[in-house]
Amino acid sequence: MSTEVNKHAHPAHESAHDAHGHGSMRDYVIGFVLSVILTVIPFWLVMGDVLESRVWTVALIMIFGAIQIVVHMVYFLHMNRKSEGGWILMSLLFTGIIIVIALVGSLWVMHHLESNMMPMSPEEMRVAP
Image 1 (spheres, one colour):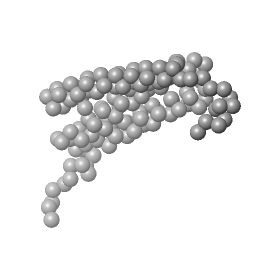
Image 2 (spheres, rainbow, N blue to C red):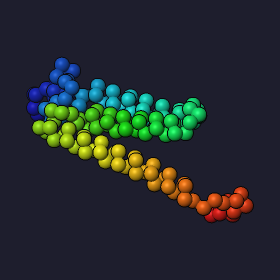
Image 3 (cartoon, rainbow, N blue to C red):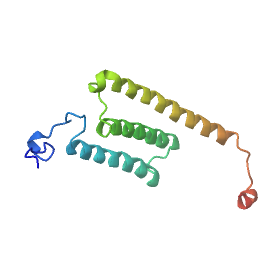
Image 4 (cartoon, one colour):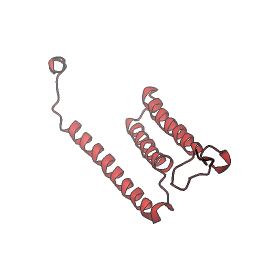
C-alpha cells in the first residue's frame, strides 16, 4: 500500500487544471451551469413565444448554440491558447469555420426547400402520409 496522498483528494492541490490538462470540479460545475442556462433560454424563447419575429428567434437560438459549443470546448474539452503549443487554438478556429458553414448551409437548404415546395390544399394535407 502506498502512503502517498492523492493530490485530487486534497483541496489545497486543486488548481484550474492539473498536470494532465484535466479541469477541476469547479470548472466542470461552471461548464454544466452555463450549458443548462444556454439550453433553457432558447427553449423559453420558443415555448413562451417571446419574440414576434421568427427570424430573430432563430438567430438567437443559433447564437446561443454557438456560445454553447464554445463553452463545451473550453470547460469540458479544456481547449485554450496555451494547450498543445497553440494547436488547440487552431482547432478552435477550424471548428468555428465548420460551425458557420453548417449553420449557414442548413438555413440555406431549409429556405430553398420551403420556397420550392409544391403547395398543397388542406384536403391533400389530410391524406398525405
